[in-house]
Image (cartoon, rainbow, N blue to C red):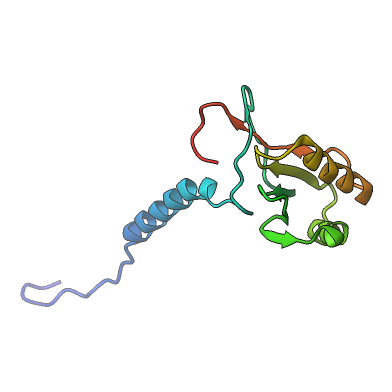
Length: 138
């Protein structure tokens, strides 16, 4: 290199801004994921110790709203088509976990009827979702 001679330009990719943007997006999705619920708004009954609602992978969510309407995940379902819609929602899942989310104003009889319908469809081990006493949200 001689004095007065221009230095050759070296192209260097700076990935620091890319990593910053990806980490910010990751944090945003981690914070927002619990708020992205499926199904209708249901006023859950209170309980003293629901430590954990479990892992959501492979889980089929059956919701019963205040009027007694049935929902599978986020789709409303007519009572007469419940069993075939449930089987379609399960699909090829080898170990499906079916969880019921019933409104607090429902009679236990209505929730039990849905549990019986799920058992008659051929699935065992139905779970119930509740919220901790004093917890915010639904």
